[in-house]
Image 1 (cartoon, helix red, strand yellow):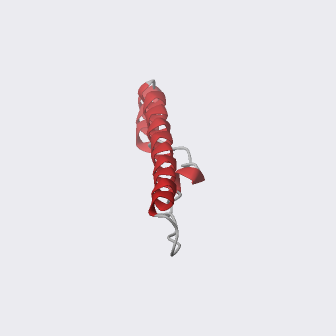
Image 2 (image 1 turned 180 degrees about the vertical axis):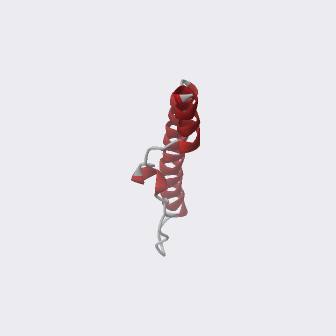
Image 3 (image 1 turned 120 degrees about the vertical axis):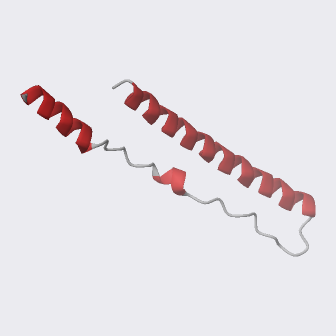
Length: 74
């Protein structure tokens, strides 16, 4: 009976998830547009910003997948 009560208590306790790293909450700003600046340089900076955002999104996926793996092992 004690084992059943213990199992029930653990099931009701739920799961305590780790904190999401601050980096994964960051929003990537657009490249600033400076009048007279060549459009190609603005495009290049915008693409760099997109690369950073995509890298951050990939780290989010890996973080989530790691949590799923750990919880699935229980």
